[in-house]
Length: 125
Image (cartoon, rainbow, N blue to C red):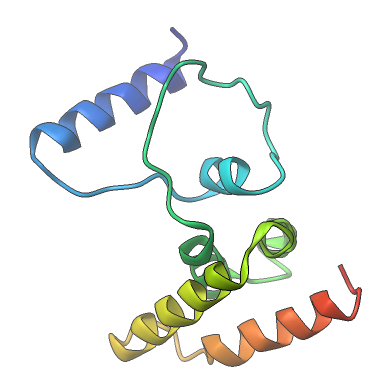
């Protein structure tokens, strides 16, 4: 077992034992839901809950900073390519909720999503 697998297993055990709802987010989650950006067999035989494609889209739009975080845009392209219409609606709902709760960092997340969708549909992948 490598260090990553050991850490993920420990986190899973700790959170599950405390009956906490949780899911993997970030790069590993994007790799699970879209085009992998890491080796696919990083942690064989380890099953973890992963954030939905729609939720990952909303989080990536929130985190996006093209100059300092260029991977976010690449992740968004992969997620949007894999997204179903239902995933896009989940992303819209999550963006609304993030905004309603005041965690939107003064960004218009829904407009950002619409702009990305327009670029993606126009072939600007």
